[in-house]
Length: 272
Length: 254
Image (cartoon, rainbow over all chains, first blue to last red):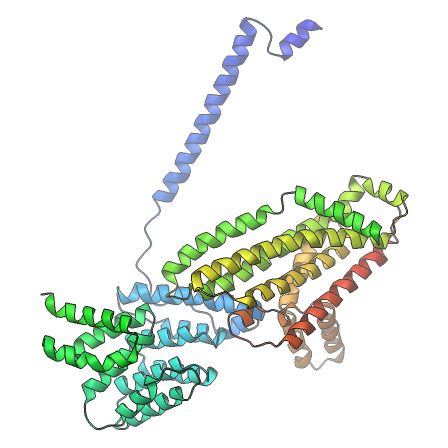
């Protein structure tokens, strides 16, 4: 009986040592197999081809497809596509400049989340980059209709009309949107002044600078970068003249914002 | 009633021992990572996206935990034969079901409100201002979780835990789409199908009509009377399901 027990426990003396060697061997084999598997998994992943250049023609589902989802998840889907849209724009604006799927993205996000203010504003600028001026205009008109309390969308629409419309009445049309924005409770005090300025004769460059100045004042990081580029092109190259041309923009923003804007636009002149 | 509370307290202790509260930790870690990620890619919309995705996550985590725990709640007592000890004492079937439900409700309150409060603090830190609507939305998710729990407990009174869990999840999914059933009732010309669609529409909990997530992100406006109406609907639905569970369970012989 005892002999059987000993053999169960691995025995004594040489048999016990053999048992230990066996356990050690099993441990080594298991360790080697695990190591081999880890190496295989890592090797598989690191040898995957890098992501191919982004394709401008991406499938974007129709808003109808998601409209049947519960409202509690509809906005989450809109947010997920917002991220995809920003990513898509970022990839192509620095790459091939092709934005085939952008209008569909913008439509999907704004239809699923009609009160997503930033989506209208970013979408309109991105559509302009894509050469879809009419689409950008229609998007902002749709946004203004769905968000009658959003002065930002109306101001962006006024700016877009003034800057890109090919109409002799563009000053008047843009001023109308600024007046609508001024009527929204809580809108900034400078908006009526911009509307009045638009209706004065001449001074096209000064008016444009004013438009981009308010984009800088109210926009997100992307809009501010775009406004800086446009303002740099619009404003005179002579430092003194540029300084004077910048002064009217001070009324559109906080002193800190104006200080940053002026230092960037004056600093650009100093760099060769 | 004190017997139901005794069962509730025991169920609460039992579910806490199952380390369900770890879900809050997983949620917190996921949200912290997500907030860092969103801050870099959302173009200034991280607060909105965190609220939206965060509430979906609270709902998802809450429902999954509630379904899988409640599916095994009754069956576990039968398998461990503790149900014989319980019913050898003067405990009614209704008290047993109510106790189990109340105990798990207390656990789920900690789980759902733990996640919601963490999300509230995180959004406050990112957006710079607190959003009280987020807390109310968390309360609504809790009510939805209670309904799903009641439905799953009902299924678990006559089906195996796995089947009860699957059915519970199906009811949750169907509840999110129930407004489509209503549109089906208006499509067909067949009176029988139309009537059947109405029955389905009435039977399935209408989660799609009682969500506060669109209100939190500013897509919808809801006043307090509407919100309390929605809350009343969910509570009434849970009570009906618990009543049905009691009806089925009282016929079981031990």
